[in-house]
Length: 150
Image (tube, rainbow, N blue to C red; front, side, top):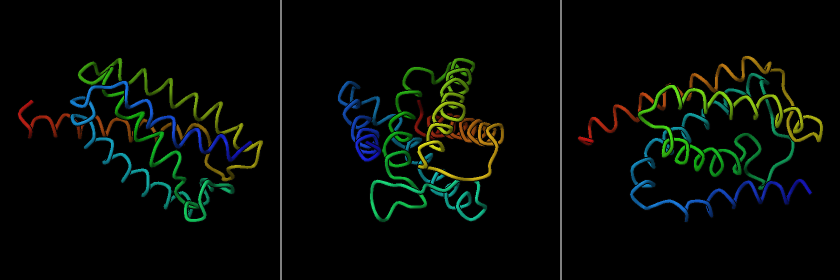
């Protein structure tokens, strides 16, 4: 069942992109790739600091950085979130707090219960890190669009 969930988390976000116009994907692909780099770095730090570790994974090579989350779900979610909230900062902030809160306080406890993830980072610190990342990528997208003349 865990493998089916991993595959769904990996594939379904990409399928959702068919419901977006190509111009939207082009507009936000840079910030999605930027957050992917940030997440890879964070997962590397988290592994070393024992903040969180994924004990189960989809592939043999994604023990530190879980591919379904970092290279699919977060990547695609970034595009969708920016599509609906960019240039509406408070809507963006509230949307991210709700989604990150659900992840931290509902999904992470479930992943701990079914032994997908372990670690010692508290929920509030995890939420703080996610909020900081959300704000950094928002500033990045503002800068990027200024450079592009949008």
